[in-house]
Image 1: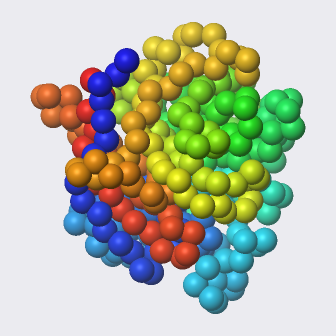
Image 2 (image 1 turned 90 degrees about the vertical axis):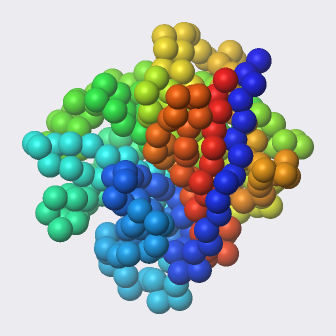
Length: 309
């Protein structure tokens, strides 16, 4: 059994950054944040000060400070990639309703030029796979990319377990940027901790060294659209070599996850939504930066010290 832990060392509240749902970094310069009911991409500087915001799409439904639930694209996933020597952010919606079949590529080298992506084939495939599992609804919450693979994380509300889709990176980028065929995917199932009668669900992902780090949260709800009482959050990891192991809905792999806690041992009750890892020291302590959503139109950023062993 792992002896690791995840302790919060710093917390920052954002009054005017609604519903943080995705996080990426160009460490040590900038952190980029998505809000699932906001039309903007937000940039924080190295001290976590909100520096700029860039529109991703029309802001006409944002007049009240949040896009209404029925209209929002629910952007939950974000990761970096390179294409033809230029740096991009890729972001996509959860897919839990048709309004949430959205994807965008933002060129960081061309003044945040935004391209809306046509992802119907991807959503159709993912929905087909998830619907085989006791009518599970599509609910994408995490995305991570490295030079080899793209990892898409499905948050589960059923006993099937959380699902991870893995694509080959170069082929996936060709699908996004050149309208090539969607590449084949490997599908993996993972078991996450349970709190009360609810199982925690994937909410964010980031690849660092030999680990796929993830956030997960426990929410008192039985569907993928409505919010519920927040019961707690976790930070965990999957060793990349574990993806060589066979899984199935009936035999998911156990993913290591630590409850997010303060230094005094009390549990963090916020909804952790995404993370990045900034560095690891010689004692294998990882510094994670986590964003969370309070479901009231605000956000928090956490600095977390993670020990994996």
